[in-house]
Image 1 (cartoon, helix red, strand yellow):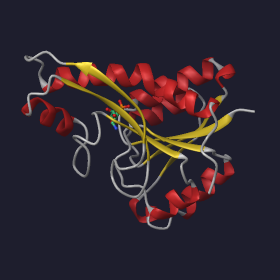
Image 2 (tube, rainbow, N blue to C red):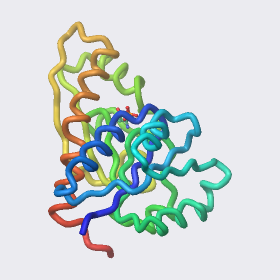
Image 3 (cartoon, protein in one colour):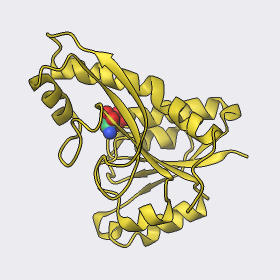
Image 4 (spheres, protein in one colour):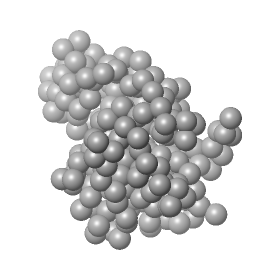
Length: 197
Ligand code: GRF
């Protein structure tokens, strides 16, 4: 039986696209993407989902506080694991409680550095550049109620050239994400999700 995942996005959703395509093409991986959740009605990932016949849900700020509709959808699609891929809203307590150790996120830097509130997208890469780092990377971690603080599952680093612009850094990091995020999710699923408390 496959593990059923929901992917949460806020934007372009290139990680979501890579993951959907991988798992649709490889059912032997044992991971099935069953729902896409977006907090933006204009997110490019919604088109990706529609093109691939994947159901999606757009959550509104007003609904986020209680989560009734969201929790209903996650139950309806029998979601086992939530995968955040560029999802920018803080995950509320009710969701962490409903999915303990079953929410993972990818952060475009080597946590605990360059994480926390406001550290997303180009802000991360600009900070890495400003600090003159010789490497950066990606971190996949469990999600709790604070930004970027859950236990780390996986990290990979990439070397930077001194003249790399923040845009170039972003490109290198995104490439690393595409190569690794789905593998980490597959490994997590195949090695068994942490037992529910
Ligand atoms: C990625 O860099 C991810 O690490 C961060 O948001 C970005 C999402 O990119 N959390 P995309 O929407 O998957 O293209």
